[in-house]
Image (tube, rainbow, N blue to C red; front, side, top):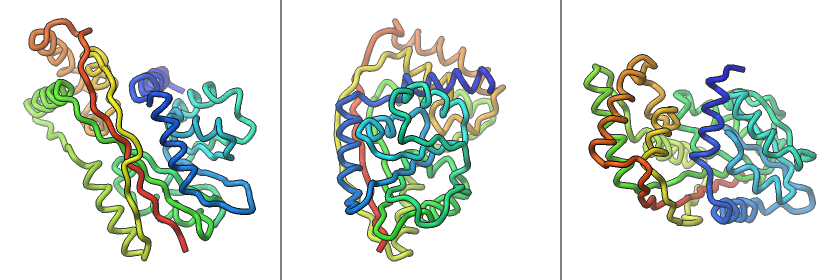
Length: 263
């Protein structure tokens, strides 16, 4: 496993984590949506990452299959869940080819994944294939508003595009709409609700580190050499524009959950 993958996994775990009370609210909403009777629920999460969704559910005793294609993400999760691994299975695999039998889980969790997969219909078909009758697809996403961070991201985009590389923004939101339409065509009735809203404080340095480590999907299609060229310019611009990089700003966040039940 490369040191770069490991470094990014730890950066993701630190910079994209939910506050404990928020993670608990999300876990409660997902658990309530299962509606399983007569047997112990089994959950599968696609693109589990380092476990920000998984760990509160694992701690509540759910049987859990944590799938991710990235071994470094799974290793961080394994370390964090070391004391509660009895009911957890870590599965390094591609969400577009889930190595599980049909109708084997009660819930499939997908948070911030669809937009990372160009051939997302394969992953959606696989998610529905492994769901038991009456099982539920649980899709989650964040909505974030933070003006200073938006300025940093837009400046990064402008610097990249000045190097002749186009940056695609908004794919996540568009993909959520495409998946919803696909679910409706299959006869399902997806229902969306806001689970929790909260505020966080973040420093400009942390926002720059998130860009530096390419934790956002819109950064990942940019060639590494271009990204490496523009980041020193972005750091310099931010220091000149904002002053000290350790000053904090407020981030308004909310988490949405979309549920689609089979049968």
